[in-house]
Image 1 (cartoon, rainbow, N blue to C red):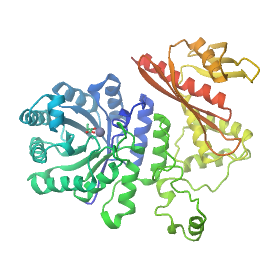
Image 2 (image 1 turned 90 degrees about the vertical axis):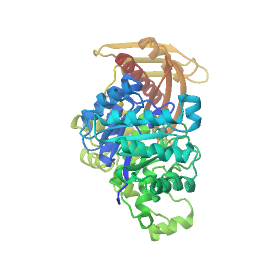
Image 3 (image 1 turned 45 degrees about the horizontal axis):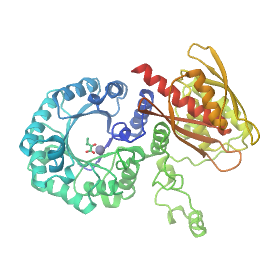
Image 4 (image 1 turned 90 degrees about the horizontal axis):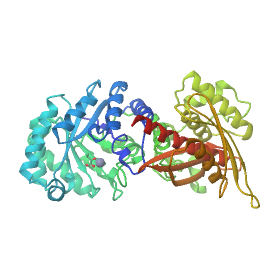
Length: 505
Ligand code: KIV
Ligand code: ZN
């Protein structure tokens, strides 16, 4: 095989990252982008873990036809039945069964011996196989499992019907050379290995997830499990964009391809960052703000003469738009639409109209509207689509000799208006208190940060907040050239998510 299967687990392992909670619409939007990206398999969730995950897997199974949809399950009959129930409507359904195999997990978590685990794995793979052809099995904590036992269980589960066997470095413990050897030895010593695809799933606790995955690929693995922006449990998973671009950029070494349309990478990264509330660090490979910026004079000189001198990839290949037009207040709808398309947005006519109005408003305040401004603006508009309460108006008064005071007006679910006012320790506090007086859902603010989208005094501010209610965290984002307005929008965004979750449950 000269193709590496890209298995994306942003919506499952990625969502397991502390603080990343996605609602149904966000999951669907991300899944659609993963489909456009050309991901082979989308792990949509763990149906037995919660009704929300069950519904999300079912929704994606129904709506996404261009990628296989995978449901994760632990090795338990009821959980496997539930995984199948959720995923069965998919065009290409997959059930992914996992069971720990390391002695440390067996002794302290499962309280079973190796023979019991082996028998359970085989029984559960067979049960999953009774539902569908495409079965993946993961011996969890494989990199800390006794290699001989690992080979036994790989052999047995392939015999039982697993078509993919995934070797997880669950705790990010492996080092590339040793992980590569583990995979190589599976190919040497498991006699039926040619009947399954060998996959890897690496965590980034030592910052080696991508290196370990690539080493596994060099030793025969033909599926990589990864997430957009590398998000995931603890330090995260192997990053999709890094693996894909490494395989592509160093095709001289790998002689392999993927099905990924790399020009969709940047858009996928922005979307995942937007919906999870996890900012991408500026120096992040491939998708960080600085990934293609050259600061030193010598480097700039080289890039001007020939980009190849200091650039191993073309930013256009990962979908970072090369802006040919500067948008401003005289720009028309057509130019705006073109730029949106270049940035990878697919908007309905109605959404385009709303975004264009917001753009005109912004262009009145800001001389030049950059791509980042547009991204922030479109995201802000999209956030308001499924709101229960909408922020209609806000007014604050503050200063070093006055008591911060805020007046807000919200529009409710049936179009009714609500107005109230409050005092606070600062303008944001006053705004939040006034909103709370109207909505009245108890919550606690746990995180608040403001970032400017671009440089310059007229830059848009982006506010990220997290609130907690009944032990659940909700993320909210808002943007505006006025940071108090951006803060109010972020709060409304978090509250609307909270209200939607409460309504669902
Ligand atoms: O890290 C891990 O081992 C997992 C399994 C469920 C594959 O996420
Ligand atoms: Zn994992």
